[in-house]
Image (cartoon, rainbow, N blue to C red; front, side, top):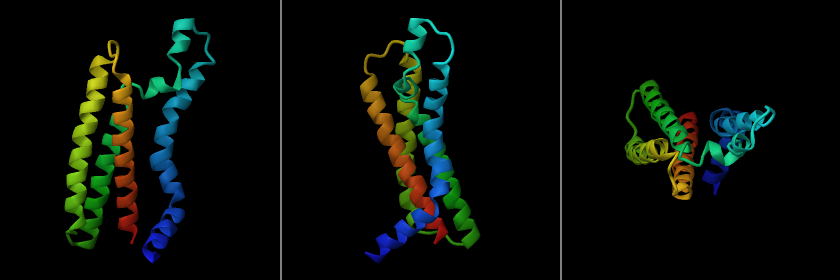
Length: 147
């Protein structure tokens, strides 16, 4: 139980980091799209300003890729500073390999078929899952490197 308290304490101390590195990248694209509603648009154009438009074709996969790269960099930098290779990094690299391959498949597939896709809900849910996994690994690695 003390381990959970320690992690929650670290998370509480790093709320700003989580906001800037995880929450803001998720919120800014939909916010920008909402600003587009202020422009004089035709009905078909206004329909494309729905918030789901920013993620319906797997676009969260690109965000997952960025978070994965940042996660591996942060772990590498931590090991370099400590002068030691930690065992948990092997699990992290295996996890990130799965996340990266999945995210690339979802995001690239969405980019190629965006105009003709009828399977958007599958790509949307897949990109939400892979982005959530990537964000969790990013946050966990950041907190681990603070200890």
